[in-house]
Length: 229
Length: 297
Image 1 (cartoon, one colour):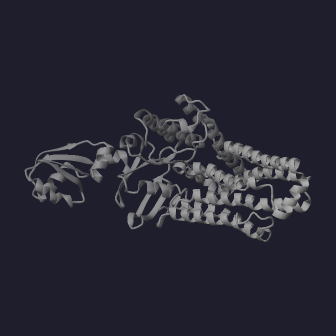
Image 2 (cartoon, helix red, strand yellow; image 1 turned 120 degrees about the vertical axis):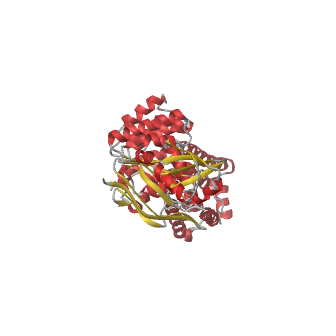
Image 3 (cartoon, helix red, strand yellow; image 1 turned 90 degrees about the vertical axis):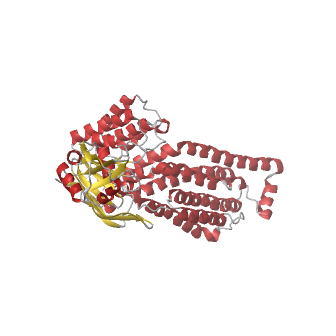
C-alpha cells in the first residue's frame, strides 16, 4: 500500500500545474478588492470623521465590507472549474484514477489542495480587512464586520465543493440536481447581510460544507463504475 | 502458461441492449493479444471493464489473480493504460508530465521516454495540448515504456495516427514487448497494424467471441473460397452451415470463408447439390479473415 505522503507530492504538483495562473489572478483580485474596500473606509474616515462612521455602523448596521460579498463564491466556483474541468476533458480523470494510489485518497488530496488554496486566498483577503479595521474600530464593531464576512467565505467553500461534484459527475440527472442544490445552498448563505445574522447558524453552515465536500467522492464512484446517461 | 488476465462469464448490457453474455477469455503471460470486433461488439466495454472503469453486470475479471474491482492500488503500477485517443494531461509539457509520473511509479525509467521524445524532436517545454495526435501517441507510449509495467492495456492505439506514426508505434511496442516479455492486450480499428503486432487474436461478433487463437494458426487454417455457379439462389443452403462463414454472391461469383479443407468443402457442396465451376482457394491476411468471419455489414 502506497503511503499517503508519497501521493501528496505528485498530486499537489499536478494540481499546482492546473491552478497556478488562476491562483495568481485570484490572489491579485482578492487582495486588490479587499485593499480597495479598506481604502474606501479610510477615505470615509478622513472625509467625514470616525465618529460619523461609527454612528452609521451602529444605527444603520453598515459593515464596510460589502464589496467582497460575491468574490469568495466566484473564487470557489472558478477554482473547482480550473481544477476539475481538465480532468473531465476527454475523460482524463481515468488517468488520475489509474495512478497507483487509493482512489478515495487521491480525490481527498485533490480536494485538500483546493481547500488549502481557498483558505490561503480567503485568509489573505481577511487579514487585509482585519488588519485595517483592528485599530480604528472598537471590538464590538470589528466583530460586527467579521460576522458579516464569514458566511461569504463559507459560501466560497460551499460553491467550491458543489461545483467540484457537479463537474466530476458523469450523469446529467445528478449534475442538474447538484446545480439546484448549489443554487439553493448559496441562497441560504447569502440570505442576510445583517451583522450577526448567521451567529446561530454557524454549525449548520459547517455541516452543509462538509456534506457538500463528500459529494465529489459519490460522483467519482459513479464515474468509476461506468454510470452514464 | 500463467494467465495475466482472466475473464469469466462476463455479461454486460446498456439498458436493454445486451453487449455480450457469458464471455470467457484469458491472456497468457508474455503474449500480445488483439481484440478485434466491429463497432458496437463491445471492444471498448471490455477495455473499460479491464481497466476498472466499468463494473460488469455479471462475471468477474482478474488481473494478476486479483479481482479488478477490488484490486490493491499498488498493483495498478504494473498495468500501463493507454486511453482511446492517446489522452494525456493537456496542461502539462513534455518535461512536466515526466516529472509528475516519475513520482508516482517506483520502477520509473525516464530513458526510454526521452529517447522517444528525442526521436520526435520535440522540445521538453512543448505543451501536450499543442502537439499533433501522432506526437501525443508517442508521448503516451513513452510514458508507458517509462512506467515499465508487466501488462499493457491499449485502447484503439492507432486512432488518428498517420501511417508513419502507426508504424513507429507498432515497431516500438513490438520490440519492447518481446524483449521485456511483457503482456499486451489491445484493440485497434486498423487490422493491418494488428497483424504486424499481435501474437493472438480474439474476434468478437455481436454478443459472443467467435474465436481466440494465435494469428499464425488462424491464417494457416482459414481459407477464402471462390467459385462460380448458375444457381446463385441455392447459396441460401450454405448460409446456415456453421462451418461456412458469410457466403456472399455477386452475379455468378460466390465467395465464402471456412476452416474446411478444399476436399471437405467440395463434399459439402455436393451434399447440398450445388453445381459450381472454377473453385479456387486464396490465402488471406488478418483483415480478410476478420471480414470473412464477421461479414461486411
